[in-house]
Image (cartoon, rainbow, N blue to C red):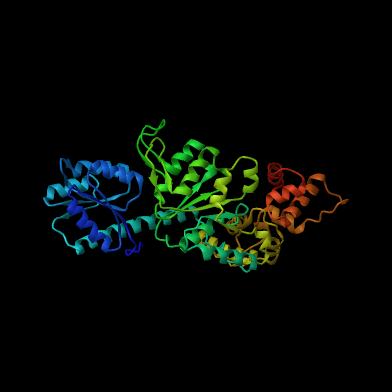
Length: 450
């Protein structure tokens, strides 16, 4: 739930200067940030430039009517809470205001206590909305949050650094192979930050075309492209006040990198089809499993963006470098999946534990999670046996492949790749040792089931 003592960003819209200043003084004395607008055009321009939590809108703005302006305000800043302020309160006007999207209705004269009640309710509703969004994201992930438990000094050092910088607003670059838990670490850092009561929003950079990704990230206005039948809020705006997590940022199209640089550097952006700049109060975290320095040298990633993202670098080690974590993680995951499946599964057989311990886990914690889930689903006994685990685990624990032995070249190659993956610090390094490019290594791993 939101902390109602958090300062809000408020906009006072009134044509009378003295009333604006009086209301602003009262709100600032409560610790909130306040801006002013004397008419509808000023209000809309201000809303488009920067985010606000709530606006106090006078029902009569000279020749303008507040209730007619209300839909335009909500279009300029979706999700804005608008409180209609009026000296001509009536039941009919209150009903009309609510129908048009007003958050509340405040008759004049009012006291500071009345203002506090309205602001507390707004903060409470916004906090609940953020909490629901966070829970929906967690339900989508449906993953047990155990990846950060460790017995390994190397990972513990990484976590210590991450949690030391978590309360700051520093930009974070998380590095590590796929499946190591970079997203889990980013969420844990957000939970330990001063933005914990605000949204944590993930952008999956490889998931969409450049055009759709730009709209997903920054939003768009109606008519800006085919299919844009209404204005849409982007994830940057959704993350306002919170954290924007750019997953696999190396895959961000070059055309969008300049716009992301502007967001990181100046906290400004534009919706697709809208020339008016907007301000975003977001903390940036980015993650990648690629060598960004190599991407910069190859011209696929902007050098200035790399340095802007790489303020604090945190590298999550692969699971093969966390051998003492494998079995505790597997047991913890087993507890999660046996409850999810409604089965009484209490552990692993000794052979299964030996296979789990021997396997190099090229897919890291994500692969371990999938293996344990498979075992829980397939077993009919109170324990998971080696026969319930994926075949590559059994092969890794039982194979006796030697050069000159009665084995095929294909099996020999697979075993060599498996051993290199077990000791290489990254997939790129493994490909370098093997003398092949990463895409060839990917195909060979897939064919061999590694």
